[in-house]
Image 1: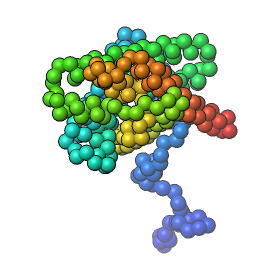
Image 2: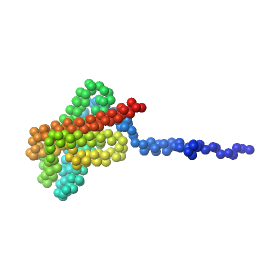
Image 3: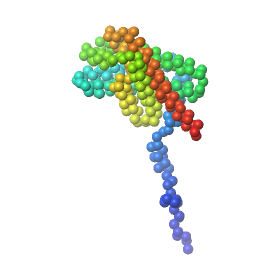
Image 4: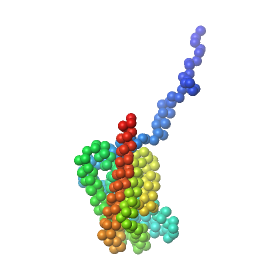
Length: 285
């Protein structure tokens, strides 16, 4: 007689086999968050590419980013101009602050605060002190080109008459933020550098949420009054060109503490900690 017994089912002590099908495994992989090693390696490779780029290419990218950041001031001013003067007005107008960051980040332009993370990771990974000069060179080129771009943008919108007096007044109003003492500005700048570097750390795993992450983080920076060297300089330049601020106060009350704080926030609180957790994980593995 032919053997009519059914094939034995593949069972385990707990019941049917838990081996996933190929399709199920693929769905699982799609839902598993990428680990810190993958994020770290993605950003490190971006930093390595920056080491290879010609200074002129970096400068042009930084100049484009400086121009693009000017739209944060314009967008915030436009929103403020058409909103009533109420206590909740900033809750809406500060969304305009995110526009420049969206253009720069999605357009792959070079912003100084982003490089406090991207070029530091390759330096830490290689562990070669001589690379520190390359890091400073990249930072210098990007910072100067960012500031030149923001200054020219501020000069354009302040001197060409492209906006009527109502809009000009609104942009002056959103630009006149309180300048605290050096320690307070420095501390606020640490938080701004920290948040921008965290944003860059989050983006490799963000996929379709990239836009929302950029908006949320930069909105909090603007709403919290955390000092950002480029976005803040754009406002200060607009005030200087309009005759409402001086170069001396810009350098002593804003530029120096903000630059130092942004570097500390981006390098120490994100780059070093991100590098440390990945290196510790490799050592334990």
